[in-house]
Image (tube, rainbow, N blue to C red; front, side, top):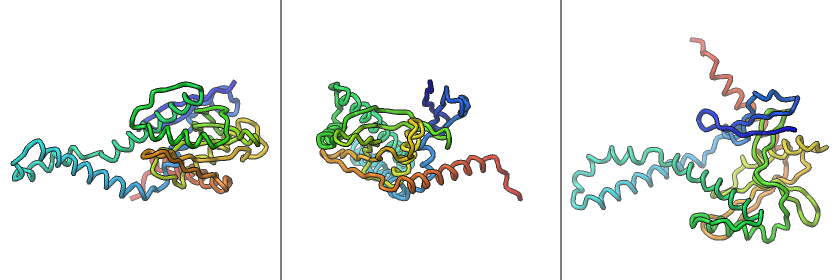
Length: 258
C-alpha cells in the first residue's frame, strides 16, 4: 500500500515523502506543487506589498497620534518606531490569508461530510459563497484533501477536492481560492494535480479528469469559476517551473569564477 505524507521543511517550504512505491526512494523529498510554481514572477504582488506597508505605516501613525494628543511636534522623532512596527505588513497579511484558506477548506469539508461547523464571522461570506456554488454545481463528493504524487516527474501536492458530475459521471479536481482573483499560475497547479492523480489511478490519458478553480467571495456571497481548457499546455508550463526550481537549487552550490 502506498502512503503519502506531508512535511514542512526549512523556510516553511512543504515537501512530501512517498512510501510503498518501488519506483520511489522513501527518503526522497518530493517538492510540493505550490513550492514549484512559486518560482513564477507575480508582478501584482509588488504594488500590493507596497500598499500594505503604506497602510500599516498610516495605521500605526494614526494610533500614535490618538494616544498622544497635542504632541504632533514630536511625530518626527517617532518615525523610526512607526517604520519598525510597520515592517513585515505584507508578510503578515499573506500569512493571515493562508490561515483563512486553510480554515475555509476545513469548514467546507465538514459541511460536505454532513457536519454543522461553527463559522467565524470573518468567513461567513466565504462559506455563503461556497453554498451558492455548491447549490448549482451538480456535483457529488468523492474525496477531499487528497495527497497525490508523480513518480515520473518527482513532485507531490494536496488536491482540495475531487468530485463527479451527477449527470455525466465526469470527475473534477477543484481548487478552492479565497484570493481577490484567479491567476494564471493556478492552471499550472491544477494541471500538475491532474497529471499526478491520473498517474496514481492508472488512467490512459493524463487528462481523465476536469480541472477547475473556484474563487469564493469574501465580501458578499459570490463565486467565480475557471476551467483549465488546455491542460497539456499548462502542464508544460509547470514542468518549466520545475526545471527553473531545480536550476535555482543547483546554483546554490555553484561558485562564480572571478
